Length: 363
Length: 127
Image: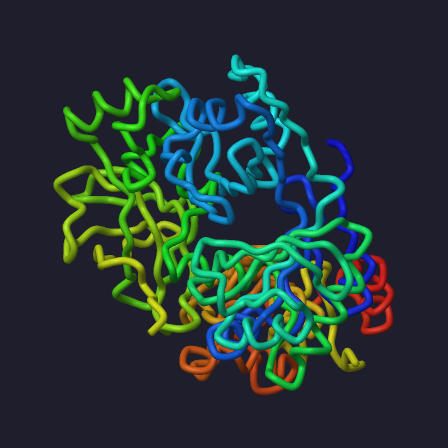
C-alpha cells in the first residue's frame, strides 16, 4: 500500500488535536472536538472543513464543453459563466464513474471537482474520452479546498473577502481575494446548510484556515472533520461515492435521474440509461429509519419478508433528528414511503421503515 | 490517569477484582478513540464467556467496537444505566460507566493482564 497523502494543513490538524484516519488514500481529520459537537455547530452556527483531498481538473480550450458534455450526464451547456452544477460521470452501462461538480468560468474554461479516491481513475477516464482536443489539467495537488458551512458561514467569510457574498446565489461562484490569496468562492457544500467552498493555491492554506477560525470563533464556528461531514451529508441525503453509488449501481437506481439529461445530445451511458428508464429499474436507493434503538451500518444485510434483498449503503445515528437513519437499496415495489423491512444488526433482525428524504431540510 | 487498582487488556478494557468477583469497563483511552458513545449492547445476567470472548458492543457515531472479556467468567450484573445514558462512558469510564460484573472462573488468568503502569506504556505506543 502506498503511503497516505496529506493535505497542506496536516500539521495544523495534528497541533489542534484532531484524530486522523485514512480516507480515500488520504490521512484526514475525522474529528476535533467530537462529531456531535461539530455537527451541531454546523447546523446552528458554522463549521470549517479541510477538504483539500478533493480533486480539481481544469478543462480548457474550444473542445472543453464538448468533452464535458460527452463524459457527464447533466447538461453543462445550460451553465452560464460563474455557475456550478452537480453532475455525474456514467460508464457505458449507466453505472457510476464518479459524481462531481462542474464549474463554468467561460465558454472555454471549466473546472471539474471530483472525489479524492477517484482522482486517478477519473483523470484517465476523461482522457480516454477526449476526442475533442480539450486540455485537461490535474490541479489537485496545487489546490486547497476549505468548506465553511452553516447559517453563520456567510457572515464569517465576508469578513475575509471583498467579494460580495450576498450576490452569489446557490450553485454560483465568485473570484477574488480571500485574506490576500486568489480564490474561487462557491456557494455550494455537502452539509445541507448554506455555506461556501473556497478553492485557492495550497501555499495559502494555513493563512486562510487560521483567518477563518479567528473570524468565526466568536460566532460559534468550530473546525469540523470527516465524521461530522458524513453525518451532515447523510441527513441531507447527499450521496457518498463508494457507499451510495459506484461502478455497480446505475445513476437511476441511485436516484440521480435528475442529473441525467437525455435530451442534451449523446453522452457516455445515455443508451443504457434510456433503456433502463423505459424498462424501469429493479432496485432503488431509499432513505430509512430504524424503529428500535439499533444502528444500521453500511453493509448490514436488509431483508424483506425474510429474504435478503440488499445491503445498507450508509447508516448512522442522526445527530439532528435523534434517530438512526440510513440509505439502502431495496427492490422496486418495496420502496414506497412507509414500507417495512428488516436490517440484520449483528445477527439480530431489527425493524426499519422507508421514509421521505431528505431526512433534514434547513428552513 | 488510569487507576492503579485496575488491571488492563490490550483491547482497552479494565478489570477490578475483589475476591473472585470482577467489574469490567473500558478505558479512558478507548472512549477517546471511540468519540461520543451512542449505544451500548451488553450481555444478560447468567451468560458465560471465556477470556478474550466478545461480550458486547459499544457504538459511537462513527463505528461499532466489540467488547472483549479480560478473564473467563459468568455475568452476575449488568449496568442498566448505560441503556439510557450511553454518554456516561465518555464522562466517567472508571466509575458510573462500568459495564458488567462477573464471577471469575479462574482468578489465575488475571496474571495475563497489564498493570496501570504497563497499560500507560502500551497506550503511549498506540498513539
